[in-house]
Length: 335
Ligand code: NDP
Image 1: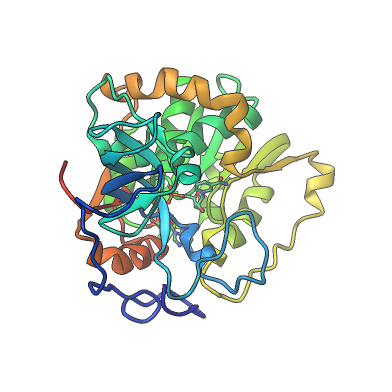
Image 2: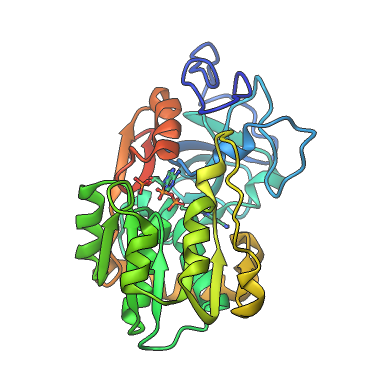
């Protein structure tokens, strides 16, 4: 991480690829920890929020200038001095953006050993079977109060969170309205079973919701003017699951939602959340069900794989601007 961006992050400026440091894999001291080879790194929208001044507090730590970025990843343990890990284990959790790294004992203990009895490709564990899938699963269970026949509106419907929400909602017998930013993404959303799918860049969200609403649940990934349209289209007692507001992540002038008073009259329930807060209640159920559902093809996903750590800066911008087509991952190394 090289510089705090003001707008969109810029590869080569905000982030730089540095080949100057090496690790001797045979002799690097482990001091009771583990040596990990990074296989896959996840690129998520919230990474932009970590590119901030450390004095600004948030739910996730700011990146430190001069230090590697870090995020969810899957790695292969090459050497271990820790009783909970052995060479050959695959681990999931926070990885620095490095090809190899030594995790100190306390950091290693935060990693999960993946059994992967379903034989899924490892990248799935940062996508539909990782943090984005958990986001959809946990918050839907916690906040949706969904009933068959109700109508849900899902934004950023082609991404890993939105696409998973669409499928859960269809399986529970809801009518799904979903939006995305290109015709290709709209076709993918339709293939997941969405009843109404549209490109918000060519059709006004407000017009579609007026036709296809009212909505009982809004899964918000974008915020701003779209949130305003969803409040207008909400039924009395609708639930708003405030997952993200990507329209305001890159320093744009914030859009001032003008109809907040309707929250009162329509008795809306608005739930913001951070996925980690919901693990205690929902993570066990997630791992019991999701890998199998994915293996059986009952939950589908698309992946946008970038090969090579040196392309990470580009992948980060692509997720902010919608150029990613599915879950964005960096394949750092094949197994
Ligand atoms: P995606 O892979 O869907 O990537 C983000 C997408 O947002 C882009 O591909 C783009 O798709 C869309 N987008 C970008 N800018 C705008 C805009 N101005 N208006 C509308 N859409 C826009 O990401 P995820 O599925 O990983 O994440 C989706 C949301 O969930 C994000 O807001 C993220 O921050 C949030 N999230 C929240 C968590 C929590 O704990 N609360 C945990 C994980 C994710 P398009 O082409 O359709 O515009």
